[in-house]
Length: 545
Picture 1 (cartoon, rainbow, N blue to C red):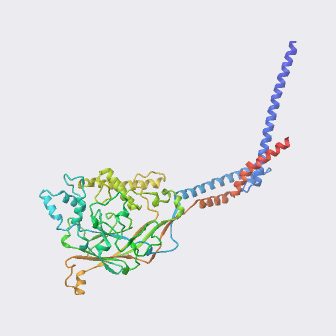
Picture 2 (picture 1 turned 180 degrees about the horizontal axis):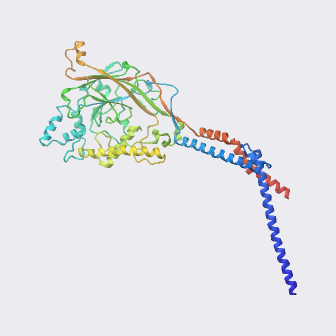
Picture 3 (picture 1 turned 135 degrees about the vertical axis):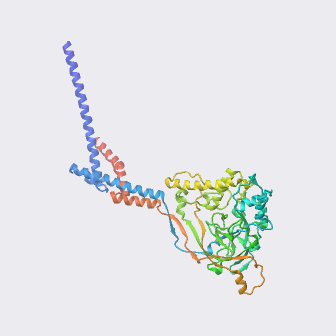
């Protein structure tokens, strides 16, 4: 009985081992069958696909060496194609914008005549302020009024530190600038569109800049340049900038231009045409008795041509109009526009800002110079707790002579940050800008000036025309002529270098060149490994049933 039991146990063990072997055999058979099915399906795909080289890898009787060679060639094509596509993508990502010329020219009457801001180097009348006398009093250590100390430091380019100078001042300083400055009638006499006009009552209006009291032509009113909460204090109503009464304000902007319904005689004034006969001619005058070399070493006038919607920064960009010289300025407008396709791009890629993308706190019109001035105002207010006398402000204290060192440090710091940010931007497109971040406007209007000059001897002119008595006798006189160089000009335009369509076309061309790949090749891949595979598997199951 014992032997029979042991035999039966051994038979059971053998049968279990045989069962395991049978199961393993069946599993391996099924795996081999599935593998052969997958291989045959891949061979079917390789034989029918439009991709180059795959049919040679899928042929059944090809030698192994041939398959290896074709696999290597196919992999090399994929690698080369991906590297070239990567270069195209980087080019599309880093430089999607191209600057080109417009298809047609633009007549000058479609844009405003440039705003002309003129500042005399004679900052005061000797009867109101005597710089030489003040220096003599300082040498003798006599006390002077605070107003004269600040006038000397702010306008006469005096770097000497004033002991116990106040950090802030009030609007009485601006009123003193106005009272001490030579009147407009003593400085200018004008000719506009071939007709002599009253410079100070019709064409030019006073404006306060870092150069003190200056005069500007064809610039928008302060109410149109500054926002509602900003003012230019210290000037009475007669010194504010406003449009002449015989012209109407227009809704002109640098981005949209003049409205179609706008008349020719509007403000800001349109360009009258090209040539010296249709421009602006200004006779500049100065009384030698008011010229003080200790306050300003160079005489004459500073002139700036700028966009009518920009606030002038006379210390940064200007050219000189010396006395006893006939200065001729031929103006060439420069307009940079931007196509509508670039509106969807981020500003960091197109390198410009539309009006709706950047709203300034102090200005109603966005321009790069207005943005830089606002940045300077905010930085001065943060660091020095005051604002310079020429800055637009709203209930902010005015910097006195004691704050000039702080203001100078702010200017140097902003210049340093701009350089650092420019270097960071070249290295990384995603770097954060810590400075002003004032990109150019997407529609930008500038004026390029070509200057030439010759001698203007007013005494010989009076002698030639037998002028014996004149209000100009004893004064130094110069002439400034500003006009458009040509009737028409070519504008520039930012356009799309590589759009999404161009990028896809380049990628498709490269894939077709290296691999014979197309959109239908992608459809084939999806079809073979989804719909066709599902239908084949379902057909086999039906046959098995």
